[in-house]
Length: 114
Image (cartoon, rainbow, N blue to C red):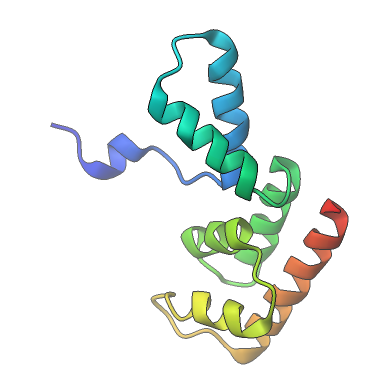
């Protein structure tokens, strides 16, 4: 029996999930759950896949884990306190400067997305 990690595969952003679901929708055999997931992804993904991947990569360069970087890219926090709350989930301690840099990256990505 495969472990949960093997079943999950990889972590994808909401924007990438939207792209995957849109592609699968065109292929047909699209179920109710997939329709709901696609609707959610369309409504709540703030940036496109390219911007999301770029943001994720830059956040990881700051020492933020992939899981937390994807969460930040999905949520696109509106202030530094939200970034700090998300970073509190990191297994290792994060420097205050990292939160500030992360927020700057989010702001830059948000301005490109509009």
